[in-house]
Image 1: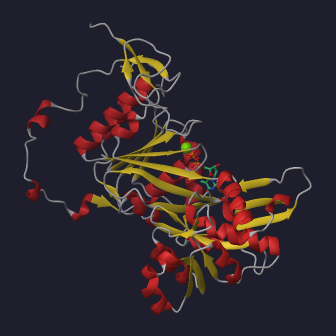
Image 2 (image 1 turned 90 degrees about the vertical axis):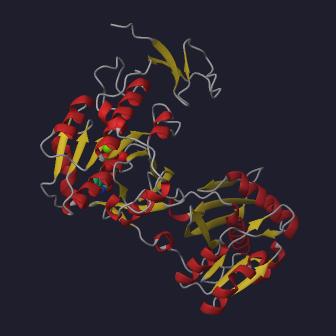
Image 3 (image 1 turned 90 degrees about the horizontal axis):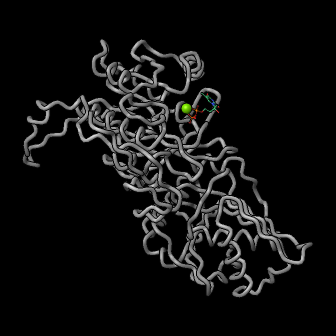
Length: 458
Ligand code: TYD
Ligand code: MG
């Protein structure tokens, strides 16, 4: 038997070297090289010579796509992120922090698919059958089409998938860090295991047209554990993110070979599993106080989806030597910068005042389009006068106090119309684009070019 060769991989970029180094020669990250086995050159046992021979070049115009190549999952927010449903034979990675709801989401998807008559296999290396059943009981009723398997040996899992009596059409593997291949001499979750297992799963998915979902845990640094190579290998990478305190969750496509990466899905964790949030703006603005100073509404974009958010600011006389500034859900530096702009360009002395800023609902937004609403909320709190109800404020604020245009203004104003808002304060340069909406909906729009004009309008 040939001697197995030890090599070193970078945990971040997957770069391979023969010698250990402190710094990865590929991505220059420090302390990321780990020992592993050289990936085997021989093809996976599921790829046979016969199968490879059948492949020959085809004219692009003659390739046909059938409508049934996609399954709908019955969860419209998930379908949206996947680009219109699960593609047959695709490999999807679902990443996210522990406890965010990855297993719950996939089990709910299995439930819907099995009710539609699809055959499914849910493999768990983390939970026992009883634990899965307990979760399933909270989610709802299941049919016989869903099989459960608690197994960590990938060879046995794939044997079942390929040779089992009930060949599944969709397989979920929870999680890639717990499965192992017997011929790879490394611990489960290590770089070589994750890499070899994913490549074996990929072969099976492509060769047998089985759609596979793999769950990947996210490390402290926020990347899916194992090499970034995992992301290169799979067709679709979905990240499930959210706040531990807030009950809403966002599913984001980071990579998608079958659709756009601009889509997000919004969910809420309830005691019966995840429920879809079809109107995130309404969800974010629910419980918003009325006629309160320091409260402004703006429209942020998540991918291509407009979401109205509420910005709350509390400005009060400082009792410290230096004024305090705190920010929740928004970039701290942006606040100090905007406070300086307000001080200089509007002549309001902010140096004696503390400012506390919060995005209600636990959302995190990082977009310059929020600047103007933040400025408005600061002024409103400082003067102790509420911003009129039903007013949307958006625009980027520059250092000389100018208000600059925002991207996709039409979408944002449309969202305000949908939510029944009556007035909008927007950058002057965006006015032309939204003329049609003003005519159709009678929403009042004021275009401004400097933050000084804002003071009069609110
Ligand atoms: P889980 O799906 O196990 O997360 P992951 O697989 O990403 O680690 O997350 C479950 C969390 O959600 C857990 O903390 C309990 C909670 N939960 C509910 O609040 N309601 C429910 O109906 C279910 C099934 C879970
Ligand atoms: Mg889980």
